[in-house]
Length: 179
Image (cartoon, rainbow, N blue to C red):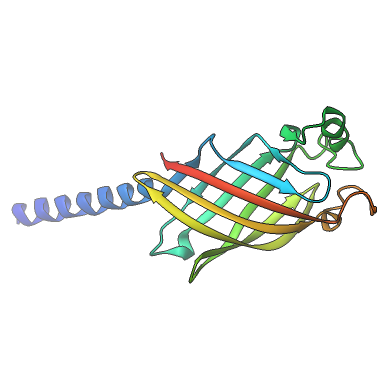
């Protein structure tokens, strides 16, 4: 009876240890070598500060998720005056809304990669977006890369204008490592 109890306890500990290892392996933290670029006729630029986590398991996409946060004050357009203006209430209102956020709600496998669907929040406004992405893996590092469009008017960023297009093309490369 004592041997059965020890065997049962040992098996239980092994299952718990395996589950813990499995969860840790799928938890990724975004690294500093990311890129978030936006492009239009004018303006174009990038954001230089972002952090977040990715829970990812190719075999269990239902349990996978993205939770990312971009620091609005890190915008870089190559024009100091434009950077400063982007922080104003009319544009991003960075004082009130210092971050753009993305939180996934669903991840689907596609022939050429994945579609990551989720809530994009900019300037306090949340819209559901579907973002196509490809995945590359190298050791304990993964990287999601893709391009999608954002209509700035959906988020009340700026005002309608012939000078600034409504549609911004966003390109990203989001590398992450297991932690």
